[in-house]
Amino acid sequence: MILDMAATANLIIWGATAWVCITILTILALPILGYAVGRYRPLHRATTWATWQRHDPHLAGWRKTAVWVLLSAENLGWLLLHPIRGWRAWQHRHDPPPPRSPAMTFTSVDRSEAP
Image (cartoon, rainbow, N blue to C red; front, side, top):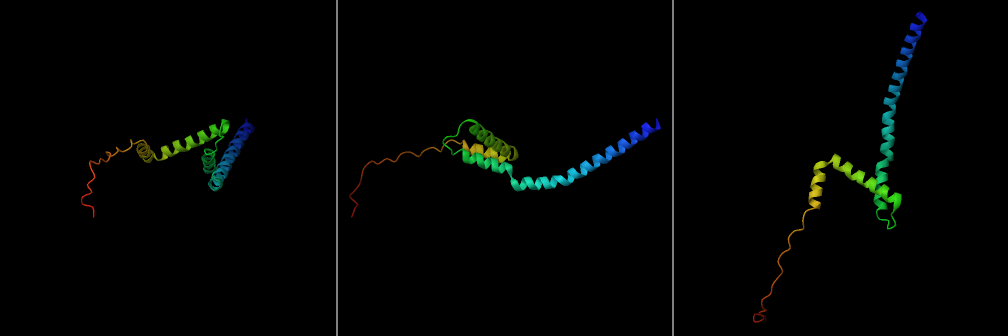
């Protein structure tokens, strides 16, 4: 009985110590991982690739799907981060064209005042 309690206490202590070590290592590794992702910029590279792929006249199949998904995700993310600017851009983009001015009319040509 005493050995079982000692084994249980030992397991609790070592288990807690392991979790503390894992937590400390995670806290130390997160800034390094963030720095690496920030330097590599994978989302920026993916959206740049998708933007260039749009100009390919033979875009079809999985590449077209990937381009569509990436650019849609970029647009939705931008709208989620900047809802007011996105709404204003959408309104400006879909405004009707301004009315045309009336056509010029000429009734007659007066050449009597010409030198």
